[in-house]
Image (cartoon, rainbow, N blue to C red; front, side, top):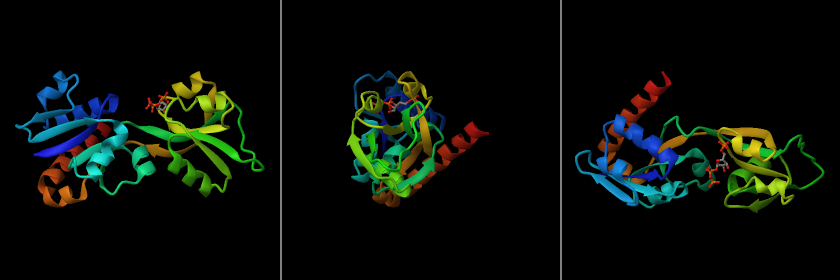
Length: 210
Ligand code: PRP
């Protein structure tokens, strides 16, 4: 049996639809309300429903063989896993956003609110900017509104959240999407099953993009 860590919520539902199309249906998934593990012995699958930011933790530590996770989280945490496939869903962009009309001032330390501390550090280091990071865990957009920071680094999907909060994109610096990942040992010992699933999903991704 293969165990797969799926992100709970919107992305998880999209991924589950792809899994169903690939032949890995699990009737209990659709009926499920609160259970964190659902199984389909017929499809040889065990689905673990976890917080999106924890998917790679389960996979890295072999609590799940494979998982689906946003590239944003892989960039931030750099887990020791194999990245097998870009699923082409959950698309968004990693951005710097600031108040409308914001311009960088090289003379000043840039204050940045983000939950992507490592991503932000790396990005501004490449731009040679002097920064101070304030880590927030959500509602990042409040940083500039309250004068806590100059800008934010966050993912932008439709752009609605920043717009509603009078912010705009200063720079979009990385395209993000959901990735299929595998535990390194599982990839070795369950190679046939994992490769088969990867190929089936690849066909579906190709079909979606055709
Ligand atoms: C993300 C992100 C933004 C929002 C962007 O938050 O942090 O707040 O989505 O989406 P939009 O451009 O379509 O408005 P998410 O919904 O993942 O919740 P979180 O704040 O709990 O991370």
